[in-house]
Image 1 (spheres, rainbow, N blue to C red):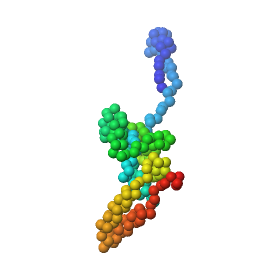
Image 2 (tube, helix red, strand yellow; image 1 turned 180 degrees about the vertical axis):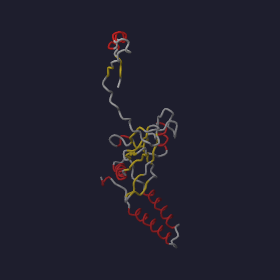
Image 3 (cartoon, helix red, strand yellow; image 1 turned 90 degrees about the vertical axis):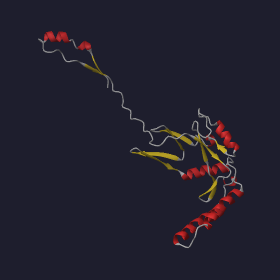
Image 4 (tube, rainbow, N blue to C red; image 1 turned 30 degrees about the vertical axis):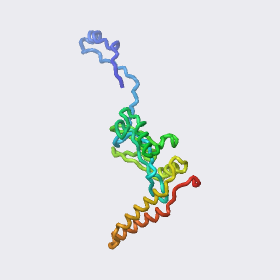
Length: 216
């Protein structure tokens, strides 16, 4: 609250003479309306991170639940890093990845985009829309909506934004899993448990399907 003294209400010399040298009149204070106190904005205690574009390469598929779904990578728009120029333009980096067979997933593929940027203690923090930041007593983390993200991946295939995988790619992935299984000795309880676990994964791979447009 701002405080001022009104000099017109403090004739010190007159008061001093009329009171017989009693030390002068007390000053009069004039106040103003208080300025509302605004609480500081809470800043996330997460490390800074730049926004990104999702990308997909035809060889990157994985078993998520009971489906074969695309495994996305991130092209981070970090000035001076991975082909992004110092001004932050990713044009050349995008062109380079496309020449290598990558498909860029534009932000506009879903309403409002798939990246959100928050203010952090050390700088901007970028998270996907499936990551919800939490912070308690200075400790920060984020919850992940895995089902929502899987729906996004499925939708990319159903809409034809990402092409269905070549069957040979899935066969190669299953072959790697079979080799992993055959390399586990089952002559101990621990080994037998590991074999059962990896066999279950291989069985799921064999039964899994790729989303098709007829599923939409």
